[in-house]
Image: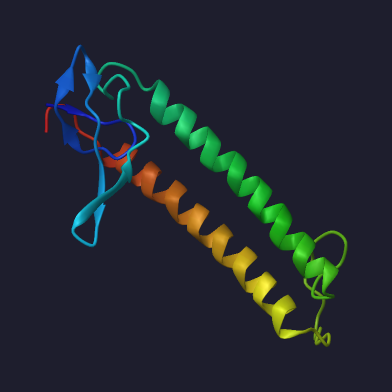
Length: 126
């Protein structure tokens, strides 16, 4: 049993690689972990580093999208600074777009903090 570099669960290995594993929802397997068929965390940190870099790049894109959405609908200036007392007249759809962009950004931020917490708390041979 070795540690997956993405989900940090103890998983069986075959030929020094983490075996295919995923996650369950509603009683059945729904997908594959990105760490499947990669070298374990004990062997290399590369899959974890790549995943963290991808999450950070995605966060930068999500932040830009969120700011652009708020600028487009009059809640922020072109630099992304909130406009005080901004109450533009927007449609329900436009409000949903702003909330969705914010939700995506929050989810990505959570994923980054979760991965960093797992890295911080990781102990070899647990």
